[in-house]
Image 1 (cartoon, rainbow, N blue to C red):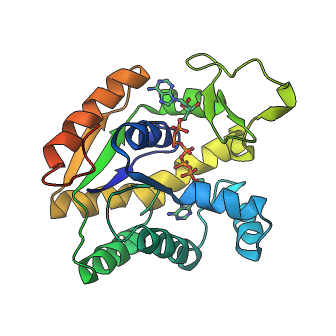
Image 2: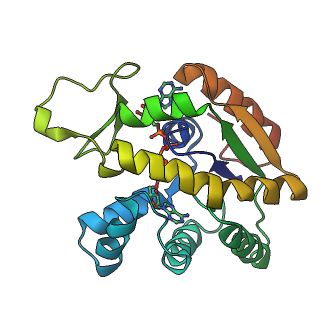
Amino acid sequence: MRIALFGPPGAGKGTQARLLVERYGLRHISTGEILRAATKARTPVGLEAKTYYDAGHLVPDAVVRKLAEEAIAAQGYDDFILDGYPRTVQQAAWLTSFLAVHGKPLDAVLSFVLSEAAIVDRLSKRRVHVETGENYHLDHKPPPGVDPALIVQRPDDQPEAIRKRIQVYKAETQPVETYYRQRGGLVEIDAFGDFETVYQRIEAVVKAHAGSSSVLKP
Ligand code: AP5
C-alpha cells in the first residue's frame, strides 16, 4: 500500500498518518519531520533547510527530493504513507516517474479539505513535545502536565509564518491537487471533525485501496 496525504498546513496529515502507522504498520515518511530531524542533528542540509521552513517557505526541490528518495528506497518502495511530499507539481512529476521505474505507483492520494479558519486555529494552537515530537492542540488534545520547557511552539506556527505557509500552499502546492485529479486516484477527505471521525473517513478509503497488501490488517 502506497498512499500520499496531501493538503494545507495544519490539516491534520501528521496526526492521521500516526494513527495509520499504529493501526496498520505502514511507515510514515514525512519530509517535514525528516527536515526537522536533520536540523536537530545539525547536518548542513538541516541547517540550510531551517532558514526556509522557519519562515514558511518551501525548501528547494532538489534537497527534499533526495531525502524523499532515500526514505522511500529505505522502505523498499512499498507500505508507506507520504506526508508533505509532493508539494509542487515538479515534485509530483518526479515522484510519478521514480515510483514507475520501481513498478510501485501510488495507490491513492488523500486530499485533506479544511477551511482556512480551522487551519489557522490548528496551527496557532499546536504545541510539540521536544523529545517525543508528539503534536498537541491546546483545546482538542492538551499537552500533558510535564515540564513546560518540554512543550514548545514551532517557529513556523507563529502568525507571520502561518500566513506565509498558507500563501505558499495556494500558489505552489494546490496545483498538485489538479495534477493528481487529472490522473485519477485523488480522494477528498473532509478533515473537519474530531480525530476519530476524520480517521474513520480515511480508513474507509485505505480499506478500499488495500488490495492484497498483507500489512493492511490492523
Ligand atoms: P510539514 O511539517 O510537512 O508541515 P505542513 O505540511 O505545513 O504540515 P503540518 O505539520 O504543519 O500540519 P499537519 O497537516 O501535519 O497537521 P498536524 O497533524 O500536525 O513541513 C514543514 C516545512 O518543511 C514546510 O513548511 C516546508 O518548508 C518544508 N517542507 C516539507 N516538505 C517539503 C516539500 N515536499 N517540499 C519543500 N519543502 C518542504 O495537526 C495540526 C494541529 O491540529 C495539531 O495541533 C493537531 O493536534 C491538531 N489536529 C489534528 N487533527 C485534528 C482534528 N481532527 N481536530 C482538532 N485538532 C486536530
